[in-house]
Amino acid sequence: MTGPWVEALPWVVALPLAGAALTPAVAARRPRLAGVWAWGVLLLATGLAAGLVYELAVRGPFAYDLGGWARPYGIELQFDHFSAWVLPLLALFVVIVPFSWRYLEHAMPRQRWPAFYALLLLNAGGMVGFCVTGDLFNLFVFTEVVSLSSYALVAVSGRGLAAYAALKYLFIGAVSSLLMLFATAQLFVLTGSLNMADVSVRLGELGPGLPVMVAFAALAVSFMVKSALFPVHVWLPDAHAIAPSPVSAVLSGMVVKVGIIGMLRVYQIYYGAGTLDLGPFNQVLVWLGAISIVMGAFFAIFQDDIKLMLAYSTISNIGYIVLGLGLASPYAVIGASVHVFNHALIKATLFLAAGAIIHQTGFRTMTDLRGVARRMPHTAAAMAVGAVSIVGLPPTAGFVCKWFIALGAFEAGQAPFGFALVFGALFIFVYYIRMVNAFYFQQPVHAAVAEAREVPWSMRAPIVLLATLCLLMGILGGIPLSFVEPAVLELLPAWGP
Amino acid sequence: MLLFGLDLDYVAAIVLFCVGLYMLVAKSNLLKKLLGLNVMETAVFAFIVTAGMIEGGDPPIMVQGTSAPFASPIPHAMVLTGIVVAVSVTAVALALIVQIHAHYGTIEVDELKELP
Image (cartoon, rainbow over all chains, first blue to last red; front, top):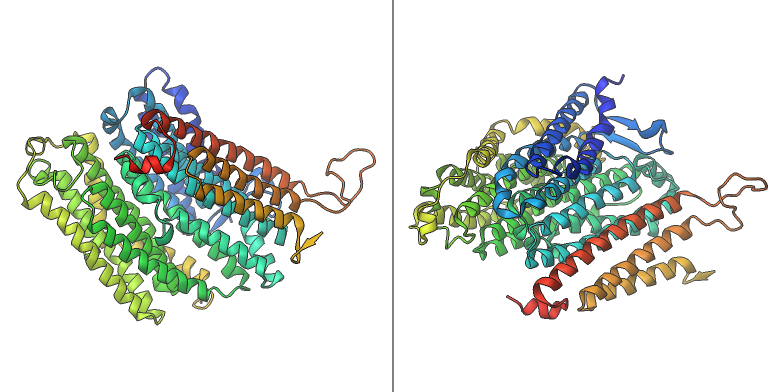
């Protein structure tokens, strides 16, 4: 029944966490070693994750009981189609870390390098744990591992502004984590269990009630904050723009997705229980998603700072994903779950390219960076590919998901939101075309830009690789879509087989 | 003991949570905001601990003379973990506040907002 890869499940979580703990010791004498060490650990973890996904593809979802204690007594790790997100997640880390090697030389003093890589590994380990755990309290602990390392990563470049942005992020993040802990406790009081599958079954036996709804609301709000949905997005732009660029890529591409994966887990519990009518809540999600798309795009138009613009664009894209989840029709949810990955890929491309440009020229606004494409052709081309992808033009990664979400809007009988989505894409097109225009078709105003040199290959290769993947995912976009399909059909009761 | 149809300890936890939230939102001093966060954490922990209590229950430790019903030990394990997390959050927040103070010379939000 179970293949050999099942045994790898606890290790894929433990490996990055143990690697993080060991980083300061490994790199005590030579800070440079920390980067190579982190890369090696992540490469190994990616290998394990690939094995797990293979196992999933061959034999279907599986679980592992930690310490041999079966559920509901022990902590259970589970690997389903949504957990499969850990493979692209770790793979993106593997690409981002080599970029950081040279980037850090200007960004922070050497003594901080081991801490930086240790935090990055902690972040990765926390997210992997979050995706594979089957236990509610464990989910909270991993959320906190991810959140705490994110706060520290925002502040790691060590300037006053970064510390203030990190602290704002911390206050809002800590409140959302507390809401999550409160909801976990509430569910424990109601059902006497912490295992998600078990909680779902027992909630079904319990029937509807106010406490069940309170717990749901607390969880939903908590994950909305984590994913920076519109009314609770205020922490994101500063934190993501001020962090060092590799960190921005991780935060914008992956850490906000913790909220989305969390939402999917909540759906699994409550759709499974079947006692709560989630229709009205889904309608709220649809509206908030649509507002996020438009507001994120609206604010992004007025940004001159390229990293701030990318940060606002993340709010837009989270809007797309949440809109898809809220529509709750198969096409929309499939598109949304795949956009979790595609947006991470595109945002990583854009943030790394932006980081490379800022690293070489020292400027970060579009006005200052006019004409940069002449001197940095590869990086600017990657940036343009990323821009086209995120708008969602046909041959790229962004297109397939947005197409599916729009189809889902029609499928769910909510056609206006399909149009809202297209309208949002036009908005996004406006501000990205502005950037591409400034980079390609305007004269440089600064000598530093006119004489900028292309980044070294250790930074250029990750950017070019990511941009190529953005294009490839447009052509091979059907693979992840058909991969998550069975999980989504199982999730949605009304549309299920 | 009941209040508004709810157990008194739950009501107390929710009131305490709101007091903390008020401190976090309304106070301008970053340290006071952090204290507010700590109050909120305490409220959630109090809620969890009281959830494990059983009227007339014994501590779940097997020694001579103990008998069922037992108080549930899981909430205590949860709260211990929660406290560890809360301490880490507080430590990170304090470190950030120290950095902000070293850089700007103030920890009042309304003064920080006016800085460029």
